[in-house]
Image (cartoon, rainbow, N blue to C red; front, side, top):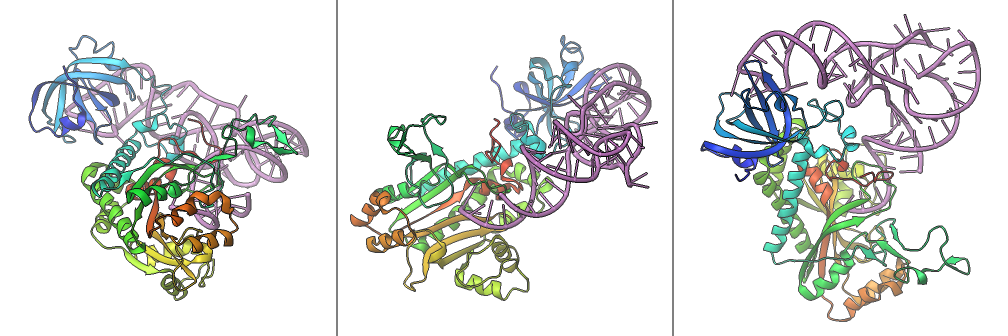
Length: 463
RNA sequence: UCCGGGGUAGCUCAAUCGGCAGAGCAGCGGACUGUUAAUCCGUUGGUUGGGAGUUCAAGUCUCCCCCCCGGAGCCA
């Protein structure tokens, strides 16, 4: 018999004489009336399936009464209306096959709630919990919706390299990639001789695919990347990972306003999609993790983002009836506390802040005509902070070259990036969205380590 | 990396002035029941993160180290 996923049984309105399901036992409750209740989950839906196992089954004593949380079973039986309160349908088993028991003395998960901190030590098992199953389904839905959004808009999915020689934007410390013997590297004049390394030069894990994406945008018009990036920063916060996934669209013939439009459309599309596709999971998060989550997502999905300039933001902050740890004045970068005040207190909605001072932003951002700002934008959301960072890129060769030099960067390394401005240069724009932060915001999960299966942070690469 | 809070039974946490290391849950045994965080009775379970020191006596005080959490910085 063909196996049916539990989500399809739960959605089924017609009762069936014979079904086959398989999954992991969540609970077993015995009735001395001579039968047992099993709750089985296969991860296909938030809810599990209730199974009634009659005592007459030949392996009832030998197997069924030994089933505990975490055991894996297959159940054949009749799908019927449930007289109980907690579910609309249930299966009356005619056969129960045990694939694997889970010794209750050893199995670390239990019916009671376990802290997220503890579950990080059990990352190989935590997907079996309600919360992490729901996170996995939501993360999957957001990934699918991302591709759908860009594909529907004629963006081309681009694979940028994970190993790179360029320190793209000075976006942080990089992990070095080498095949040299670290105990005894070859040396020339006391310095490590990288000409003998695998690539004949020092190489690193990428911190961003943006610069490479620009080369394709200036040929194929619209592209996006969706891949892993790496930062070797010793960051210990609930919003940072050493390895995280980023989505970076890049558009030719597009200015900062087009860029902001895209970011806003994209984020709202994702919220709308996941509200439809993962309703039960989101309602679970709303109830147990972050009260008001669903209403917040609904509200953001159906309202415009507020757009303000950096200069206006500084103005609002200067007049704020709050005292900040870091004083605000034009020219300083916005601190977390400032961003939070803007998005959580002053405006109480997602914000797009544009036109930052050029001195605090990356070299590739387009200089505005005012001579002191660049066409940068950050999307700020309540609770998570900066979720998107982007800009219109500097397309003028002389201005870009000047900017690289002004930032003290090695001009020679950017020869191919500068070439894009020598041959058929056009205005273009793009942004990066941290996928983990997106999942954080959509699920309400407090810690980014709990929205990716195996988080990489300083001192943590166990799995 | 900096600041603050932590690390005690499988899990979540108590432990007064330095004085016999405890509870709930889980597990195990039993009772009961169309149950659904089931309930009731009984019961097993400890190198108190690691190391050194002070003391008659250290979970508790001192020093060093490791790890976790929150905030900051960096950023997405």
